[in-house]
Image 1 (cartoon, rainbow, N blue to C red):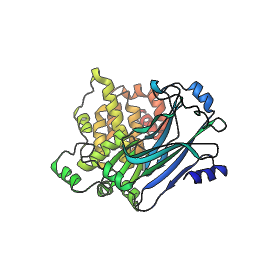
Image 2: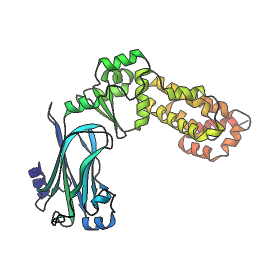
Image 3: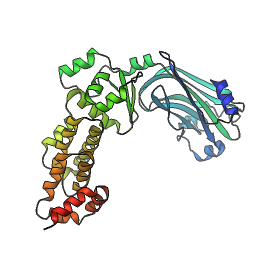
Image 4: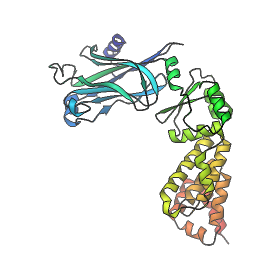
Length: 360
């Protein structure tokens, strides 16, 4: 790989990300991270602070190279620390190299197979030791070039990542039996975390996941339109038909005036979950979200709720908003607020409907 990198660099390709995939074989990828103006970087970035490469993909996982120009801890002050960070759960081995003026590795460090948790890292505190008189000889035109080779074994990854228990409460012997009888065969990467799941469950519950998995031989999915917390709840619902957080919200019909902030946080999560359910065709979950949001409609939230209802076809939420605004004085007060102006911009059809209702 290093000879290939050298040849490509000589041809003018200074920023290189490469991956090699073979059926049934380990997946290897290489990434070149260059820090220009390294001497100035060392002057401005203090001990304990890092500069990072952009995230890159190898084997269905996201990775970053972290470089601490003045060491990652007090004992390494003045040395250069370099680490590989995984943005999700993975099992891999890797090699870090600093390339010399000819593009060849001059300093190497290799790690055998290791298990990474999300945001876990491995590397060397004194990759370039300040005590070494050749500490700065690795710079080419004041540029530090780090080559990272990562190898992920799909078989080992699956064995390590498929947890004995799912990341949620299965709530019942049947769901637990379904999980334990068959090993998970899909890895879903969401918001820097990786979740194990069963292909047949995802395909049966969501037409969107079914389409995404059609012809997908790797069993790797990346979901970019939601965060990990929301996906965890969505996954739990697909397996158990239950989302305890939503049940609690729906049962609580009156807002807690002494606890407004937690209520708002719950409502915000329910809104995000509703959007995710709608996008992935989970109608039962969408209805559960609507039921949970209905008692949360008030003067401060009605504009956002109406906009949400219009964008995602939420009849229950829209009905709750209209009922609230039909109370004496509520509609007139709402039209005078900034919330109405925001609604007029984001969802003019809903705003027009409200104006028509006010006409004699």
